[in-house]
Length: 409
Image (cartoon, rainbow, N blue to C red; front, side, top):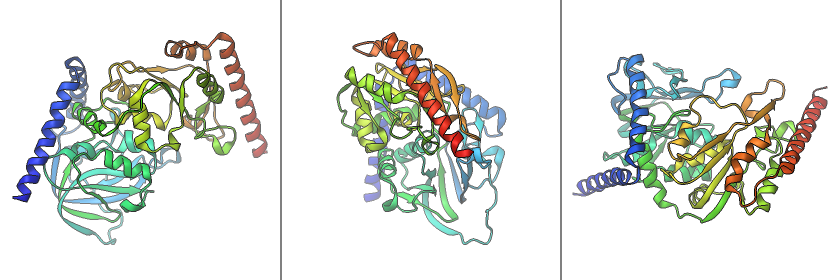
């Protein structure tokens, strides 16, 4: 009887999520998302033998701890590990994609054949890597868990840590908050750090990819998740990067645009609320984003927090880019915020020796930035202020370049 009651409760949750999604996401946007999914399905059918992109159940699945992750600039792999393949061409749902490209190194054998393998006799749902990086965990690695959580079948949610804690108690606060938020079904999280043989493994394909729109089912379920957040009413909110990426020394050169400290000051003088997301609990970040009338975001990991929200057709969002945008980079936010603007005003980008674009310091055309921000501000950014921002950016870039040059002499 208890098992039957649990099954009924899970079915009711699944139906409620779908019904809420049908009510909240208008038919025009549903058609757009379905069109995106159909294009993706056509691509899968073209490159793989599988008939369709679907949830798969694997009996006796072998799960390999990750050998490498997020290490492409150093010549490593973006995704190496996870469920071992029986048939590479017939199991596309096990692959890891960004945009339309698989960026993983599939494995079909144990990396260490003499290492002990543990067994799990129940049902597990494959969720993927549990990584140390906030933005990639949300946008890159975290989209299987939500539909697994609302799946009517019972079972546990399987994660494999990479440079992250191997127990719930040791996880960082934002990791615990994220895994709780994306688990409205209340399934238990199973964090495994050893090779594992699983009696039954349910694999939900990626529901969101970087440089791609999420699936309709994923967006519907995110709308259900955000019901747990109480919005914090605010006017215009600026999501800053100044404290995380000051970019005034080689040690703090982790990607930003020059002159951001002055922009922050000018926005505060206009009554804009400035938030530094790395100083706030995840729940508070989401509450601020939900309650804001409009959002201005410095491009970076924090913007991926917005990808935890559902459909918000009337909320203006402006993302100030610090690098050239790759095709499709706008799609994850466009699916949630149809009014989003990505301001690409790059004049030049300075990088340290052997640096990569996302860690560079960008010099922006502030007239173009102001043209996008001014409709949201009670008092526009004037030409003289744009000139001051230009000078501040040039000064910061010169000081940084000089400091790095002195250090390398």
